[in-house]
Image (cartoon, rainbow, N blue to C red; front, side):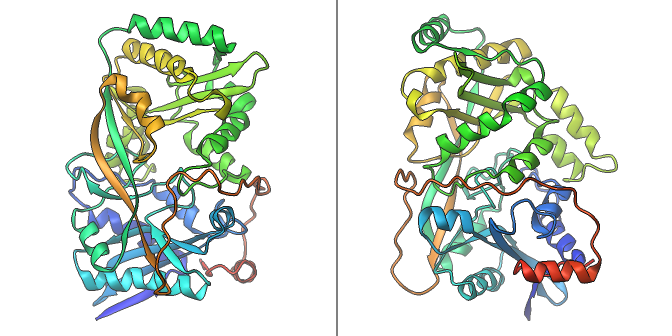
Length: 424
């Protein structure tokens, strides 16, 4: 017999985060999320995502006292306001190969969403576009990157039997480093730089870059990605959290920032050393000794993840990306990088796919966002690229130092926030 248990305390939350580690034990393609980051993101009092920006509720599915499924429901208030929608997101869905388990687990999120006034459910999606998103539907025999989900091949079959249909797909590619720089690209980059009056920023250190430019880069990220499916503004609290998470991984040789003569950021490319194998060896836990294989991955690598590339709207289709690609590919050759993997790109986003075409990319994965009506009414699918979405300029208050709360005070604050009570 199946039993659904809402996650309402830290013990259950730890079980929720641990479940996929057990489910994918021995799977060579699965790369876990970082354990401590997951605990923090899902605890409503510690999370930089929850509160005014989003509401979340996690569920565990038990059979005979054993966990057999999990799922988190997220209501992104920023997404719903931006798109004039009433949607709940499926996040962190995992289960054994059993249709009834999938039905019960996802049904808990559906019921919770209805009670919150939502009329559509979609996902898998995270709190924002920089979290893991999409269900793998092709490429099951490829190791995931650290930034993306992996799931067993039976997942799409289960979710489609429950009435979910495709809304959008993302594609992922591998790009192999040429043996030597292309002189034509070098000339093109030089011509474009002079024509547009822009140049690459000389990065003294990652700390220096963060201190002087991180807000400018995030502002450009919001502008460039704001029209894409599932995206929301990256608030100040989330920005600070992301910087603290990725500061260790960033390498100044793998970052290209383009500025104009007024020192305004007009384009950027962020590439990370591939830490997937290191995180896999650590099983998602940095402490006490998991940081060792992760640190090795950061400092000794042949593969990289092309995490983000963004260009200010007024500079798009003017060749500015040729500067970014020329710069990073030259460094790839010097650093001995053999291959770069792109993060998920919307199937309809031909602009970004066109950027990589001259390097003969190989498509290696496809992942999907599913959607389902919660009211029985006919679905209106969201646009993959929506230039008419409302532009939000919301920013949460900066993160303040958090003091330890008593159980009574914690429960009181969480009820005020309309959040599930996460007790000690």
